[in-house]
Length: 299
Image 1 (cartoon, rainbow, N blue to C red):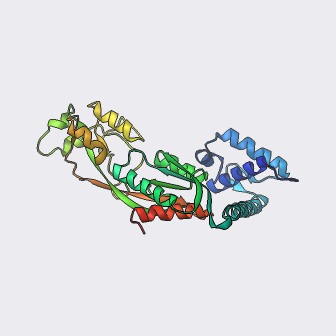
Image 2: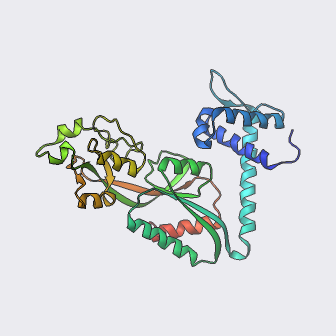
Image 3: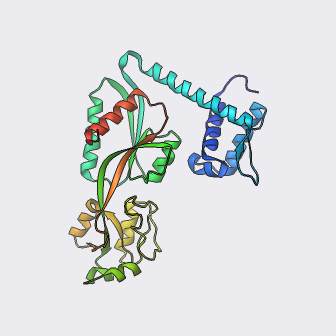
């Protein structure tokens, strides 16, 4: 039974909520960034502290016990109260305080980075004393960090598959299919549909919502989650792949890349501003989110 509530107890309770929301220990590994044995050990310590079982696992699958379900509700209320206290204590005298953490996709167009800078400048004109953290990473990592509440907001080309998030459209990015000048397709003429079908295309784990078949037109012995990796594969002369047009432009200009006549044409990839749904947002986060939407013309 819990007496005094310690920081370690709060950590274990946060882990318990993540496991319950993910639907099991295995599913929670990606969310928490922990191995299944580590999650099992920490859950066992929490159950020992509480004095009762929280969940059961077996052939029937993962499920919370009745006491586990009651604790889940109480824990959510506890964290909501903690967040409300933090906001109230930080919002003294109307001054924005605290921290805002924003993740964004790598290799964004210069115009997009400029707008992001304008949003920061707009925010700095407010009555604030806020630490802003900017992190460039991949969409899957941003989603994980949002779920772990290690990011407050994220800008990326999400597939909008997470019901835990709210998505606000910000801008579109054009992507096209490229090969190196040494690739057989670089000198091909006429209908290249069959050559495209047979070509070794770099696989990307994120599909485009409006073009789900893009990037899977043929064989694939290459995979990259990052733009730089895709470019390296293409420059080998053995692979074709999709790149943001602004990113590929300098390589096309210096003669190292060629844009292919893809039957699907240029793909317009939507970028969104994502935040965790239902999470109590600080005043600083709400203000920065508003400044981002205004700067990108999204509100």
